[in-house]
Length: 213
Image 1 (cartoon, rainbow, N blue to C red):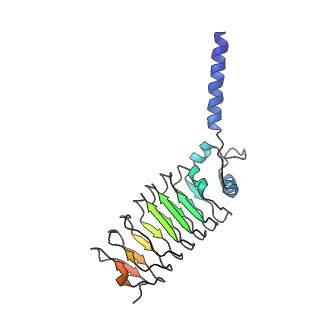
Image 2 (tube, rainbow, N blue to C red; image 1 turned 135 degrees about the vertical axis):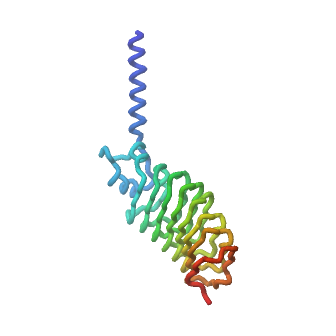
Image 3 (cartoon, rainbow, N blue to C red; image 1 turned 30 degrees about the horizontal axis):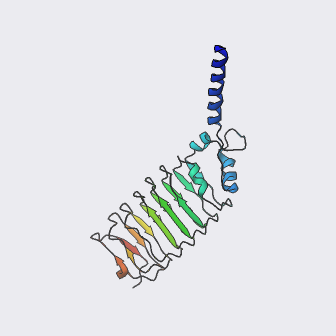
């Protein structure tokens, strides 16, 4: 009887171990899943498992018919995610502590939100339909590209490490860069804004492109 109990317990442990190893991830966007499986289904079983997802650090899913970015959250170890030329109206990114670069250009985004991305350094959202952008607890951003959108305002005051900012061809009338001591270059061309509409701090060696005279 004791041997039977031990064997049964051992079998349950083994079963649980393999169940954990083979934990299938559920995607919201079938096109996102299809694009990922093309490159990262290592055991070729037609589904992505957690261990496979945890091994992924770079996701290049350009022009794949993706309509939702929610499935990014399945890849907690991703350092670089590129979703250019998909159609994703709203993007909200949280829970990706390793993410260093995110790009979603030409995605028809109207609203973007990023929060708690402590490692994010480069953010590319140009050529979209952006009207709203929220960046919270993203202290490492040093490259921010928001060109060719519909933004009327953008708050960059929390971005102390920002070095390069591109906001050309929006609808911005005023911009505060007084809290960005690391800023080196600023492109504001194509906005109804003069250089006098830019609130500057003590830093004076900033190169500004495209300001109306």
